[in-house]
Image (cartoon, rainbow, N blue to C red; front, side):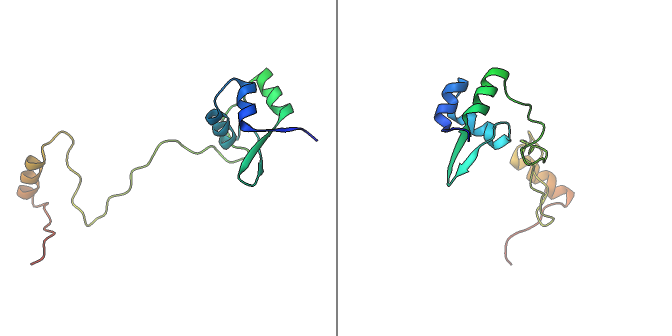
Length: 109
């Protein structure tokens, strides 16, 4: 059986930070063995990666496409007025909405 080494030892062998090792493991580029909450790495694989480099990130270890790193905007509620126009002062936007009939009164009567 292969000898297991910690993330710190792996980082020393690869000449990178521990955060990079954890990120590569999360991306599936570096296989890990989880023991409880701790992640351990196989020495043979780390030595192979140190010699040949990391594999590409096109797919995760589970065979699924890697997650997109961009954040999506939450859809706007139909109850709320549209978001203000970028670069327009709030008072000017209020006047535009008022004249166009877009303003919704949120106060209680």
